[in-house]
Image (cartoon, rainbow, N blue to C red; front, side):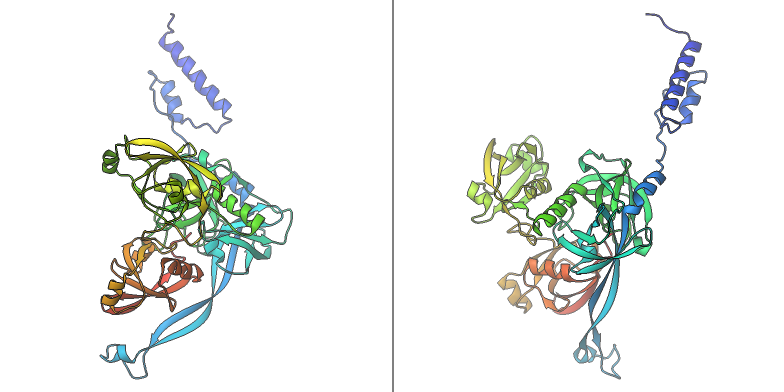
Length: 480
């Protein structure tokens, strides 16, 4: 083998670096520091440094397909009014006060993006709510009345149509090909500032959020604030990989945790809404628990993967297939299940009536079981468990008859866990939620439905010990 001398080595390295720079057309990812190292006295094997991407071309190409959406809601407000001459500090004030209910109009802002040149627009359900029509503004300042074709509460996706043609459209991508650490870009209307561009990286994938177990969110550190909801999340190729939907925040504003709905889920909702006007998903009819390391040891599993069944709905699909509490589902149709969120997401994608092949771990042995998948109701997440209603961040369960008698109430939901928005407004473990905007709630589904119907703001009547109080909550404050 022949070896070149040091001068020859430097020449070869420099030639290779220059060739690399020429190939990449002046946009090379290699830093000048590497070149300097190559032409010095010694060749230093430094790691390549990547430059920050230039998003300007993406904005020019796809920015016109992003729209601003505004919706006018009639908001019910509740307050306490004291008789004239009675000061708040008066000991009789609590007994003399009366509840006052009034209505006012409120305009909420959000974002969306055009997915077909004839005017179909994807956005979040919580942006448009139950409005029959919305106002849509394009980047060229044209304004249209939009019709809500349909929406899906479980995925928080809505489809809007405007009467226009030859519109600019986005190109959709495959979220599965996006990796943690990839650069991403968002365009939206934070706080009403239309067509604002922000960027960041993918922080995590398949993230499960409280009350949103069926959506494997893409987590990013892209700055997202109220008004960004419904806007697109782009990869560096300019393809939309998600809908910016929510943030996790203790202040109501961006704190580095933003979440997007994968675009493949949103497109499936769109196609189902166009085809049948409704969205259907599969369900097993089970309650699930994560498999911890200690549980994996106790079940004889080599690693803490899979979804542990803790209860089975009577006469549900799982029960009819012979699944039992204590079974661990390891795979669905050959795809490995990492955790309970994986199982819920996989089954939800299966059409009701179809058969799924489950790999189940029982008594130290893996076996295959066929399950005819049932239909998931949009307001249900599981059975036999406390649940977290979407948009609130609180885990609740119905009061038992004994608890009702002890507290002196005939209905209510006991708060068992508090996170995010619920913690921000002062809700505590042990509180009992009695009503939303004056409507009593006796079940988890009723609470979830009242929160979905609330336009922008809601007042929760809670009982804490022997006292009752209203807690106001801004339902848009922790969404993008």
